[in-house]
Every structure is written in C-alpha cells, then in structure tokens.
Image (cartoon, rainbow, N blue to C red; front, side):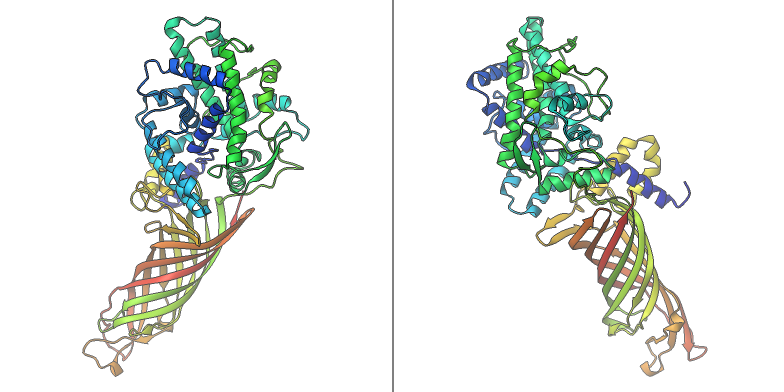
Length: 617
C-alpha cells in the first residue's frame, strides 16, 4: 500500500471499525420483560412445574441463581441471575448456550450488565422524547462496552439476530422453517431458535425417560434450561421490526434499514394472519411485548411437556450434560441435516406466531435505507467569524474580528452510528480554499486568501494513538485493534467525546479529532502597515506577510442532518481555537527598512459549515 503512514492507519482503522455492526434486537431489559411476561402467561400447572425445574437447576449455585426464575418485581440492582436474565444474556453477551451458562454462573462482570440493564429500563420508561431514548441507549452501550470485555467484538457477527428474507411471496411457515435451517442460507434468528429449542426438548426428553443418572440430574436440567433460554432470545428477536425487514445487502444498508424500521415501525403480518405495526430495539411497546411473550409462552409450555415425556423429536441424543456449544458468532451457516420436516412440523404452532419476514432482493422488496458507513466523496462550504487577541506586530494589541468564507472537497470513510447514534468514527482528508475579509478592530490585517487542508480521525486515549497502533496491531492483534477502534469511535477510553442527542440537534466534543491548516501566501498582493514600537504610525513600514494557521475544533453542534439512499447533507456549527504563526515577512517600503519583529497570534472563532457527501457502495 502506497501513501503516508497516517493514511494507511486511517484505512486500517476504518476497515476494522466497519466490521463492528451491532444490531442486536431488543435491548437487555426488553428481552427480560418479554421472558418474565411469558412465564406469567403460562397456565398455573406449567408455571409450577417450570419453577420446580428451576429450583432443581439451582442446586450447587443457590447464591448465583435467583430463587424465583422470572421475578417481575426484581430490583434494578439484582444480586443474582434468573432465567429471564439468561434469555437476555444470550446472544448479546454470549455466543452459545454453553458460554451463556458459564457466564451466568461464573463471570464476575455479568451482574454489572444486569445493573446497567436495570438503569436502562428505568430511563426508557421515563423517556418522553426520541433524544432522551437515544441518550439512554448511548449511556447503556458505553457502560456495557466497559463492563463486558467482548461486547463490541461479539457484535461484529450478528446475522443470527435477524430473520432470513423469504425466497418467494407465497412461502408457508413449514417451508420457511426448513429454509431457515438450511446450510445454503445465512445463520438467522428463527433457525437459531429452532436449533437450540430442539436440543432443549431432547435433553428434557432424556431426563423424562430416566436416562440421566440422579447425580447428574441437576446439571442436565440446568443445561436444558440454558438451551431454551438461548433459543428464546432469538425468537424474541424475530418480533423486532428492524430484524424482520430482510437482512441482505451491504453492511451500511443492513444497518440503515435496521435502524430506520426499529425506530419508525413497520406494518407486519404474522404467519397466522395477525396484522400489527411493530417497532424495534429500545422502542418496544406493551403490545409488542405481549405478542412476543405469547410465542415464548408456547415454547416454554412445549419444554415443560417434554420434561413430562409428551414430546418426541428426531434429534441425535447429546452425549453429555452440558448446554449446546453451537457458536452463533462464528458459524456462518447451520450444519447439513440440521432438522427433519417432522421436527419442523412440531414447531409450526410456535413459528406461525412470528412475523412474516420481508422478501429478498427483487420485486416486492421493502424499501432499504443506508446509514452513513463506507467511503464517500463530499463538498463543504462554510462561513466563519474569528477573533484575534492581538496582531502580528509587537505594537498591535486589542481584540479584532474578521469574517471569511471557505470551499473544500473531502474524501473519507463514514463510520457514524457504529454502536449507537452517538458513535462517530468519521475519517476524512480535505483540501480547499479560504478567503478572509480584512480584520475589524484594533488590529490591521488585510483581506487575504489561503489554501486549506483538514484531517479528521477518532482516537482512543490521545490524538493519533489508533493511527500509530493500527499498522502493528492489524497484523499482531486484530481483536485488540478492533476493541481499540470501537472504543475510539464511541467516545474514547473515557467516553467524553460521545455525541449527545438534544431536541434541537446533536452536540459533541471533538477536541483532538480534527485539525485544520490554512496556508496564507501571496502577502505582497495584500500589503499592510505594521505598527512598530518607537516608530510613529504614519511612518509604519508597509509589509508583506505570509503565515500558517492551525486550528482545532472544540465542539460540534448539528441542528439537522438528512440522509437519502447514498448521500447526506447537513449543517454544522464548530467553535475552534488555534494559532496563526508568520512564515515570512518582508518590508516593501520604506526601502532598506529592517524587517520588524512579528509573533504568533492566538485565534478563536466559529465555523458554520454545510456538509454534503456522496457514499459509494
């Protein structure tokens, strides 16, 4: 690869960050609420049986596992893990039922995750505006990123959370179930549910038949419940609007479509003919929870019946008493011969309650939307107003102001919204021109023009650290680089640069992320008198001065930004601070006058920038 080390590092950073596309469905408290509601909706006899099974599964782990399997009145800072929390930990905080169970029983950080979820639940319940909801999710995601060591990297493989798009319009639920389990398609939400639910049923069947030694019974029940909890996470995901639209297209299109329908909602039909408008992640309504809980209730009822020996399946008997280890983060497809038609038929009453997914690419597809991810070319125009504390000469003091205009072209990679709407992984280089009017006030500086350049890149702890680390870590420790890059785009190690949503736009601290340079040349075309100590102002020398101005934006405020298919536009207000240092000075008259002493000026100001970008595929 040719080019500067900084550009190489920016490209590596961008490519690594593009792999991080977290589009989990319902947030943790929503998953837990659905599961709690599903247990409550079971008939009394099955509720009693399920609670008895949970009590057996707790044996040896009474301190870690809550006494009640799905407590609707659990405090926001729980000291134990219940079955409902296991369904939420699945998928988002683990990649298999075995990993989820081990995490629930032993991971020191998992109780921190449940407490973050408790705070998020309260914040979402109190949110009355989209900006409050966005900030609540931002705070939760940033806290989870610090608490769960693999939260961001686990998110880079997320197809298992989405429904597979339908191949044709008149597909029935049985054909769709077989397609979802087919090794020809991508791993998906409904296929993952069927995979794990069937293993839970078979493990329960073995226990019912007395095939499990008494000393292993608690382990086997615990494994079966873990398989079921993991399965439930993905059938719950099947009701999130952003996960029903059809998971196909490039990364930017998948994420943009997911985000749009999750927030705005989507008119949906279930396989059994129920019509409703559903929403998605962090926007769950009570009726969304009820609809998903009914399907989860029937799944739990089937599990209880299997423990009673009432369900028969054609699943190979597991040879151990551990929860299943099929890794939904790493496996792109299900293995061949995953399920028979008879096995799928048993699950049809449950599958028919799930939404019918959107069609695959082609006639009849749902409208697709794209988020601001990927390479782009852009044009910016701007106005600025600046303040000078003094002039270039030793005799110039007092505050002055100057206006200016600018025009530039930029190329880069948009990585905004990687973890949530507060993320900002924007990387670009820019070149353009600038024209300043003469200074107004105590300082005499004429109007002048400059060639400009600008560089923007997120950082993890100090400006430029990811760029310096990327060339090494990309080859020696890509996972560490991925974590570092994801941390950078989400506000840094101390996330003080995360975006804040407001009712009137988006606000973000950006100090250290961006630097602008203006090269003022051709000073002889704009000479000015430079006051000099000891020299009367009438006799001040006429000088030609060139300078280099460097500025560092402090904040960004975006009152609005729009995005349509592959291009975006917006307005941004950007206060900055910087310095302007002379690079050359010469006296034009009087002749033979020595060059006066000049010094650097501190500058502050505000840029108002219109930003247009065209994104490429």
